[in-house]
Amino acid sequence: MNAHRQGTARLLVVVLAIALGAALTTVAAPAQARGKVAYLTLDDGPSRHTPAVLKVLRKQGATATFFQLGSERRRYPRAAAAIRRQGSNIGNHTYGHRKLTSLRSAAVRREVRGGPPSRCVRPPYGATNARVRTVIASMGKRSVLWSADSRDWTRPGVDAIVRNSLKGLHNGSIILMHDGGGDRSQTVRALPKLITALKKRGYAVWALPYC
Image 1 (cartoon, rainbow, N blue to C red):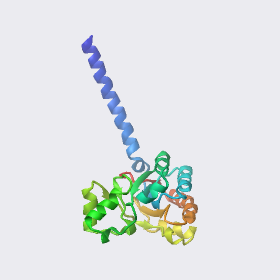
Image 2 (image 1 turned 135 degrees about the vertical axis):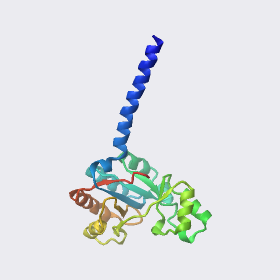
Image 3 (image 1 turned 30 degrees about the horizontal axis):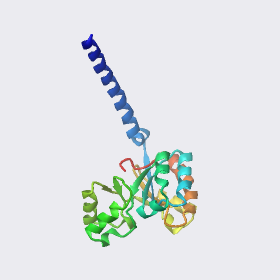
Image 4 (image 1 turned 45 degrees about the vertical axis):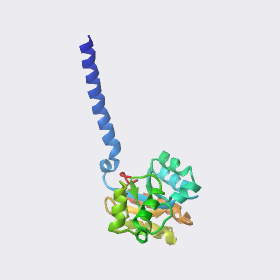
């Protein structure tokens, strides 16, 4: 009887493991399952504009990676939980948005440690070099830049933000936008237009899966 029960238990474990493995595969690779993907990223937050960005993402069925500053997280302590509830994720944009290439390695580490917990770091201004990348890698993190710059920080208008974001579009594009650092009302208005344009081109819009 005991042997029978043990055999049945082992069988149930195997069946559950197979089912769970299939489920994990489905969740881990939604972009690959759906074809082309563009990765949306937003820097310099959180800010008063972050809730509006999340509202757009929720309505559009999209997610994004928010590269946040440690200094701003103190001002908006509830933002991180709201981002994760929406299905998006968080990257590290350091503590105070300092140019890492101008800092000694110890100071680079302090800036990164002061940012939010994440497997990804985006150096402010995109300023990086071999030394900075080595320091970030030594902390068990991945440096992430971008392939398309919306230039929304210049406030060029909603249509220009969309056009800039679509330049050089390809499968795996990483689009740079901002939800902090100033008036981002144009970014909020551009987002639904951009996501709609990406979907019409056959792209899913997701957060970076490795952050």
